Length: 180
Image (cartoon, rainbow, N blue to C red; front, side, top):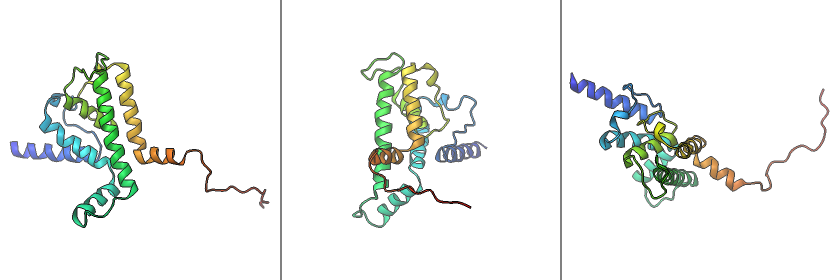
């Protein structure tokens, strides 16, 4: 009976994390696992892996099996770089703010909890370890920024910055067509 329950829990959380659903079978979400790397790490990996998107996953899989000499597409590079930089920098920012507002990476929370909250916010997953209510408003603002960046995606942000306000390749009609 215990093996069946454990297997059910493993499958449930794997699917919930990979699909960014955030459903939990526990009434307190994942608060009871705040210091459990063995429980939180696979969930974090599934969340990050699924947030990359199927195009990036397919290219990484092809690169690993077919040929490692082949360069990655620009989309893959931007997605991987944007995800890594965002999660690392904003995790460090969240750790530096913590609950006391110290800037020297002093926090009241273990690294695994801060990393989990960052990844969960970035992927817009509703998993929680229960630290959000204890954060300063500035740290909550970091989570808000993470949710927005994760929702919009790195590729959209980079494309918008690259295109800027330069000359558009699109041209609008300058005549007044007669309709009817």
